Length: 450
Ligand code: HEM
Image 1: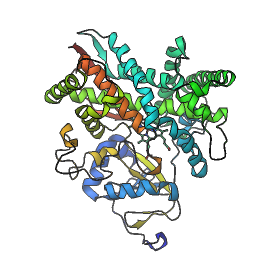
Image 2: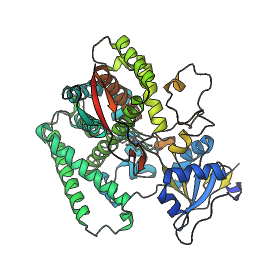
Image 3: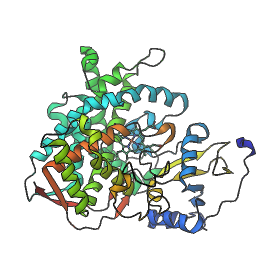
Image 4: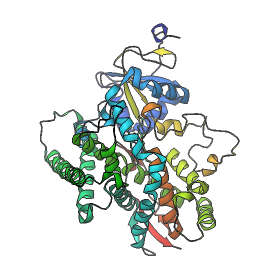
């Protein structure tokens, strides 16, 4: 049916309070609120976030339709001043032909063939971190996983050029990410950019450190002209050419490098943190993991050639991404002509879907809160419908680093679990929501060496 003839249908939803709509209920318990929306009103629900009219989608078919239509009939939802300072005009915030050009230039840097070349750095960084762990040590799981993924992203982006600046740069990125999270948590999203709170000043200093370093590396590569021989993301970005043979400008390379860096490590470290938490409570899954690693690797470190054979390892990661999807919410703003779920959507409506609710819907995942990696057996009787599992989003804007992330998570888990198990202390693993779905409190673990 042409979109112009799709009727505007009434869509049910909860009543809100004047001016704020459902914002107070959402703010009190975002994840619980969304589950109640679905249980009480069905697969498509209207609600309002302050004065903004919103539509929430819960059914995988509607989600697929929405994600596929985003480039044509939706706008991106602005995600704050701080995020924009860090990633500039990178592809994440670009639209239309500008986005298509950038995506086509950046995508080839993380194709499977390229990810293959990064695999040995991934394993090496995990081994270096585990060398510092001893039986009985107490560690903060997220801190350690972030340390490893941060080293990996810096190695794959810049090769070995950072040297002893790696630590300072890692700290600058952590400070910048803290600033982005704080903006979301304090709801200071709507403060004009010229307002300089102490937090914003700290944040800007961190971004300036990151900027200066990336520009220094870009200049050094351009001077030496040796990008063709290097196997890192920065060189690939510098060597990329669009259809008309034009390279990215230095500012564009800086923005895409900062984006790959920011998008590419905390997401994966969060996924791994949840994975250790889940494994700590699933002794059988853990034993099967140990057996698989012994059988496939026979004591040697994993390589990319083992990836396909590490089936159970990959199933564990997939199930952890189902239960605790690091990216948990996808919004977009309808333009004229938008239609989803059989209804026309008035321009300006914010349409949302959430991996959290779909991944825990009992219609697609029996016993949805149980950690059952066996659901992902290739021979499982009930295949999961398309877009019932979508931790990496979907449509044309699907996560650019999905392959990178899945290889990284599996190789890290294999490398670390081969040596030890992280016994996560019983703690309240309540997820707290920000840009990512993180454990609300630090997860401490005792290292149990094999
Ligand atoms: C477990 C780890 C990761 C998760 C859960 C994740 C999730 C996502 C999601 C949900 C999106 C939005 C997709 C959409 O709107 O449909 C996204 C976009 C993106 N991700 Fe990831 N991501 C992960 C790792 C990575 C890594 C390792 C990289 C880079 C090496 C990366 C780079 C990007 C980029 C550049 C985009 C923007 C794509 C665009 O707008 O065209 N991500 N990611």
